[in-house]
Image 1: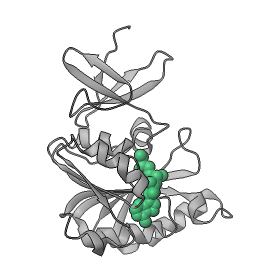
Image 2: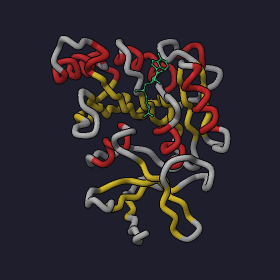
Image 3: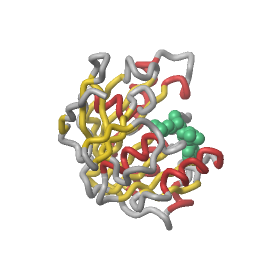
Image 4: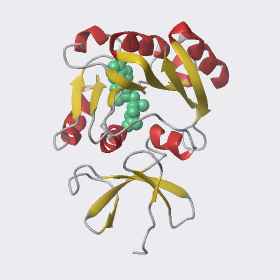
Length: 225
Ligand code: SAM
């Protein structure tokens, strides 16, 4: 295989490289080498996990140039962890921090537990993100909430979780799936209605559509006042 040059992105353990088709792609340095599925790049004894922007909205956000305030010791509350695809890359990034990963589907939880077992910084939680009171005994105050639940009431869920867990000056990354709110309204209008609902609690710092990687999706980065 041709040698790939990995370039630091400024985000801990996240690197960019040029794929054989000429497109820019991302990879994270594996926190626990040798155990994950998926494609990897090996350089010496280090392993880098290819982060597909079509499978992960966070990879799409970063590839499109947004800067996400994650540090190596950040604590993150991840709502809508699914089978752990993106969560496992967040675990690589916050290598000295913690990821609390909430998911309410028992089926997805099976895979999430498998992904988290070798990762000391990833805590899977089977719970409903609409009811943060049900997991207060498992989650500490966090620096960032990442929410991708594809539900109605997306902004309300974010507000409830922020009030319970997010530290002042912390951040919210909210993925808005327009279709899950009201498929009849146009995507932009829905995004803006949801953003308005973040109200006085947040200062919205950036909004981005996730084209061409994820249609009908937008991301919002907001600071908790
Ligand atoms: N963020 C994931 C990734 O990038 O790998 C994909 C998330 S997927 C679009 C949405 C997930 O949110 C699903 O796994 C779904 O079961 C979960 N979900 C939806 N509503 C939820 C809720 N109220 N509480 C917890 N999880 C929820």
